[in-house]
Length: 200
Image 1 (cartoon, rainbow, N blue to C red):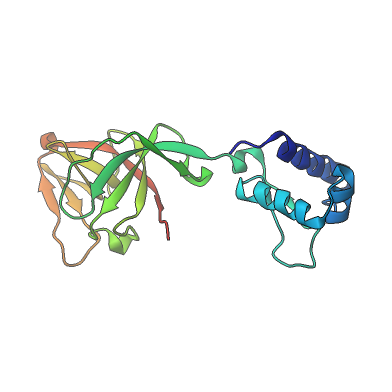
Image 2: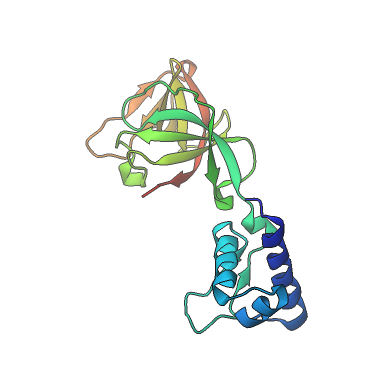
């Protein structure tokens, strides 16, 4: 996320201080350097920098010098298109809606990615619940056991992929549901699931 000029100045000051002294500046030093009227102003700037992913603040109140700078790669966020919904039950149509979802860097990975919202509970034993968002890396092939988004007659479903002799098995992660068996020629792999996000 972008910083205002003043937020960037505060971040740059903290970075330079840590490079010179090996520790973070105190609230009093930050306050004095910028001429802030109170510690509350310092706290406000630091919390904004933490929320935007540039620093980590200490959780213990007596460790005010324990500010941690997050590396540029770690701080980076990815925005992937939300293309609609995907069934974790029976297939449903994935409808494009042009919105975007911010994804943490651990799920960014390589290649072109997109996001789908899951409906249904057939993948719950793999930790993919109704309403979750799956991050999908586009790829036309998969290995046995991969969780994939597969298109069947232009409808999308999320399942575990297994290639069998003469057909493909799309297996749910739910003991009460049966696998989908389909001819290889009737199946298109849209991509592999590389991450799951849940909003409380």
